[in-house]
Amino acid sequence: MAKILGIDAAGKGLSLAVAEGDKLLASACLNVGLTHSQRLLPQLAAMLDAAALTMQDIDLIAVTNGPGSFTGLRIGLATAKGLAEGRGIKLLPVSTLEAEAYAVRGMGAYICPVLDARRNEVYTALYTPEGAEIWLPAALSPQALAEKLREFLSGNSPHQVIFVGDAADLYIAQMRQELPGAVLIAPPERRLFGALGCAFLAGKRQEDALPPERAEAFYLRLSEAERNRNAKLAAEADK
Image (cartoon, rainbow, N blue to C red; front, side):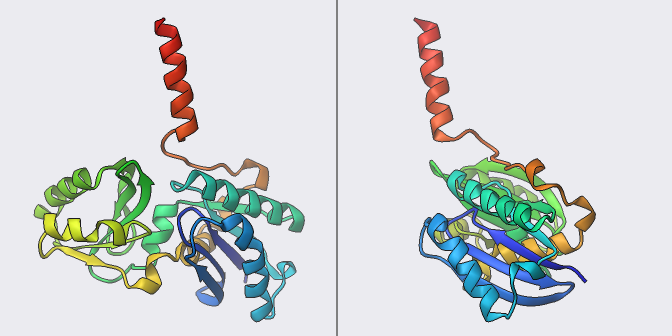
């Protein structure tokens, strides 16, 4: 049975996991800010060593490929590609939002992962209590998300939604005010652990694995640098 390494560096937290079938062999999670470039490889080495594993034991690498922090996604994907190429194995990209949602499946509520997209927006989607996608990923303001959820919950059962992800803490008070009685929040230990879902989801989709060079990030929207460049080009064209 394949041993799968999951890597999630797409948000504020950094998480890693190794799964084999339905069994979790090792995991690690850090929430110390966006210093993933300095901490990912040392944390990976420490986790594997503690579990008496090496990269030679890994058969497949799964990595969250977005949406998320532009820097975090690039670090996670570049590291995963390098590790996969070094081992001569394939890579399986997994939606960051789906990986976050995995951690709270089966809790009897719709699942709404929210990742900090800055500019007063969140990257979000909606999943059934069992983890099936209902809404495609989007970047929304918290107010727009609350309005969309209010309309959805009014016509569907269950009438509760559970929030997970690195923006859950930021906006939970607002969501509870906007959606009284309908809002739950994932326990702290499940809120920033995308690598766990990444590894287990990859185990069910091994046939979708790619050569490392074909894996790409899903950014959902333009980076700030790209937006500034486009604005500059538009301004110059108007002259």
